[in-house]
Image 1 (cartoon, rainbow, N blue to C red):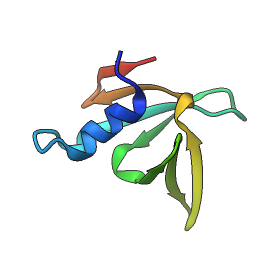
Image 2: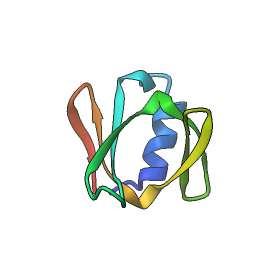
Image 3: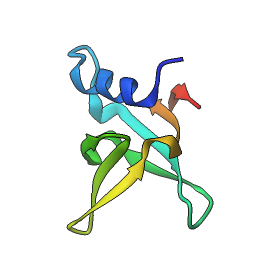
Image 4: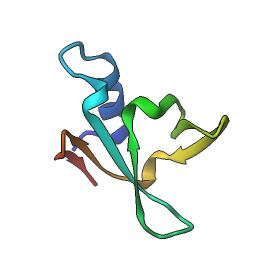
Length: 79
């Protein structure tokens, strides 16, 4: 299985893929629920973290919390 980091890089750099079609589902450690995140909300990846902007403040999401990635509602990657 391809790692989530490699899969995110593939979405970013593969000219045949449209990043705006992808949604990530990650486990929120506080609410213990899966949260949705549009790929386009990602500012950058840094080491093993996904950096997003929440209300003007950068927030880190550990890549190991990502449970699945969907392309237009179809699961294309899952842990």
